[in-house]
Image 1: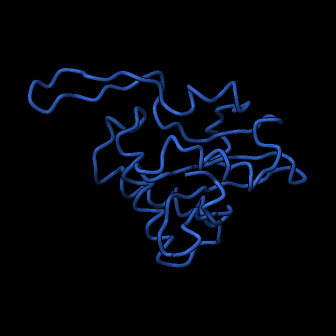
Image 2: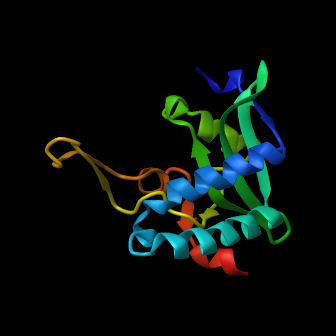
Length: 165
């Protein structure tokens, strides 16, 4: 699959419920949330996500023949004179990862993506993570998260303080 077989559109109300739920679930297992109790995490993170969405742009990445078939989405905003790109969250469903759809989508919403410095406010994982074998509970894979792998290539700068402006 290449980026020519996707389309981009703004979210509807059902999409926003999916964005919030998937963002909450994805971030729940991140390094910075490990020791936050569930009631605290869901209360405050839900509020933070909704606050970010209300001031940001959300672009849904979909099947062009079925706009309800979502591949992923991007939550972002522009600061300054619309010259500073801030990526708050990007999500791609598992079957569509590693197909370069996300990179194409980021370039579609910000043509200078990868050419000019951009900022990211959320990390998927820090240095690495492990996938545990469910039977032996031993690590079977260790790899960098997306930001660590792509930060130099796409000129991404981590700045979580842009969340609370």
